[in-house]
Length: 219
Image (cartoon, rainbow, N blue to C red; front, side):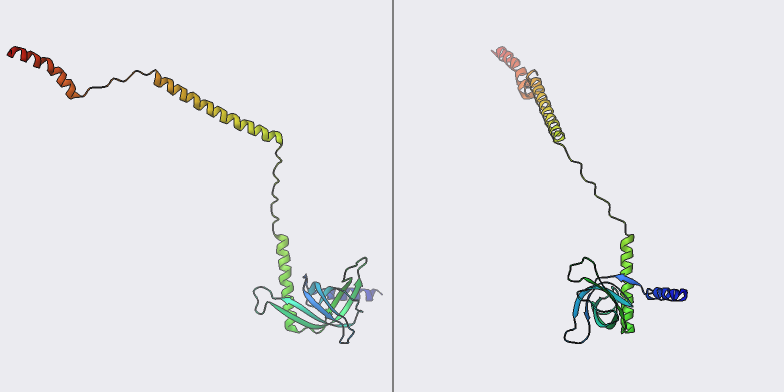
């Protein structure tokens, strides 16, 4: 019994050697070629180079053969089209019903790839590696700083600010009025400015008595 447990444990570890990445990929599951065989259109939950896990609308018996068609996006920087249809034969590993689930996909379906070509397997591995790196970068990225919420302004504070502003305006107006009054008083008390006669007029006034005396002498 101990030997069998070690063997089963070793096999379990070997099944999980392929890296797995969480990815929602459009896919189709075809169970057999008969007319009554279900064709399940669903979306994957995770994928690796050895198999895929998805939700199913039908129950499929374990070890039954299915045909999978997966829409695999192109990894940025690699050559080729934007996406590729990966078709391969697979075997149902397990199909469990989710308890209490009433959606259109109440079954958890896990399939193992059996007919995946080496080139397409390499592309799946490349996609899984890229997807895991993206998830790691997102996990290590610094969290955005939380924006501090503005403090609520009370009605009293708003009224107080309004009174302060009105008081400043009133003080400024009173100060301006006092300056105007002071300048008016200064102008009223100032002495009148005498008009300065031109130099020519002053000269004529000074020469007038001399002309009068000269005319008297001639007489």
